[in-house]
Image (cartoon, rainbow, N blue to C red):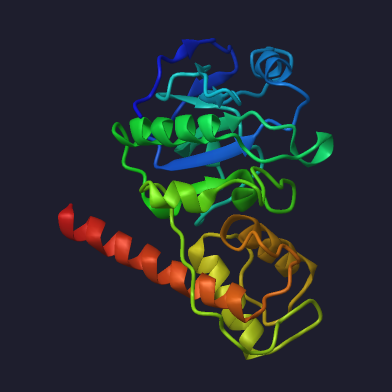
Length: 252
């Protein structure tokens, strides 16, 4: 399927970038309807926007040119970058979200998201490891696009990372635990891109980040507990991300 014609719906809510984007951040709108979300993203009083909005029927709206900085990520962090808006293309995906009746994303909508991502990546260098959810870059504030978003389907289409390990036994790590195992978990999450530095103490912040990780890469269980499978998925993703970065260096 090729990307259908994009509908122009300009938003005044943008400013200048400091450089080319190398991140892609996916959101859900978290509002009762796509019409309501589109109006808000174009409202100068709201001071929020995204580059694109994808409706449930697959229609794609362009709000802000990719060469400009849209205001979609807010306070955020990924791999040392605190101005995620300046480095990213933001895509809003119509879904009422956890507040208004979170539901599955329709096939037509996801097909358009995949085609849109392919189109965006044809213009910018965005690694698979840098295709993220809003909850990845702002885990203490956001849950979107959430555990129902089909990240695996995107990865199978060539966009984003996915890793499914053989079930790994072993004790779970959870809030209140301390020690080397906790330190290694935190170090792995930070190496992937999340903000907190390793401390060796599984505190509330660690549990929040683990839940964000699970929403993206282990959606069957989002509880903030780092069981063996969660940790195995993290290790596998780190290997994939490292291999991708090395390949980029060699090809560059």
